[in-house]
Image (tube, rainbow, N blue to C red; front, side):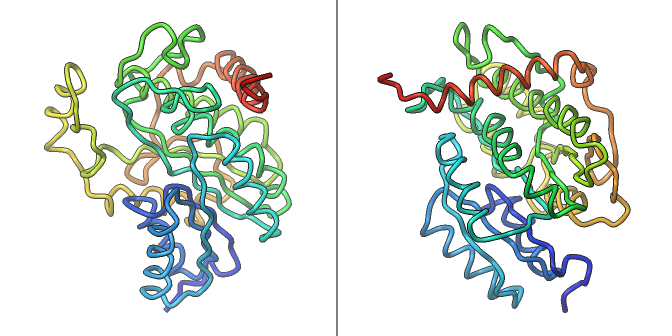
Length: 291
């Protein structure tokens, strides 16, 4: 039986064909929401779509295919969503990934920085008017506790000078929190809230795959505290659905409780500069590489 609080709501969830995103999408569908899955692989996406429809009895489960390491795909994703749906009540930027070496996309951007930060940044900007028109609406960003060791190096945002898995991942996740707080300030009074959460380290996150050095040590120390994807998804679901959070914005959550993020994450000047740098990077990605 559907819970009534999500009936009539349209939710877009990135990274929703596996893990925490899939669990969140399934729960939203079980509560009666129209859920739009976003995945990179069509076959896997269609299998997830069919599974969620079957398990929840909710046929209103859509699917959009996009490679979130490419900003042109993020633009196409937003356009395809807006062609099909007139409203958006919940945007969940759940997708994220760990990369153990520096790789550039065909757009000349570093993959980890794009997937973990620039893609959610751009998707939120492209869909913000739809969210405003659907208010009350919510944006939920998924960061990581690792952000606490992160810093923003504007001369090394994409590992141009030095790349390590831990440092660049932490930087991207800190950037996502800075963006969350800055966007919350910009959207104050619009009826659109923006919050961020840290799910904790989860089984299946592949933090330990190919891990060396500091990352391997952190993974080993964290092993007793690793959660299941089901446990990690609970905060994401809470932020998307809880009536108690109506109007709550610009906050960080863990285990369904508000928590303080790192000191750096509250630096408004840093957040504003990052926003401008991010817009420049996004704009640059639209220029053909042979131009």
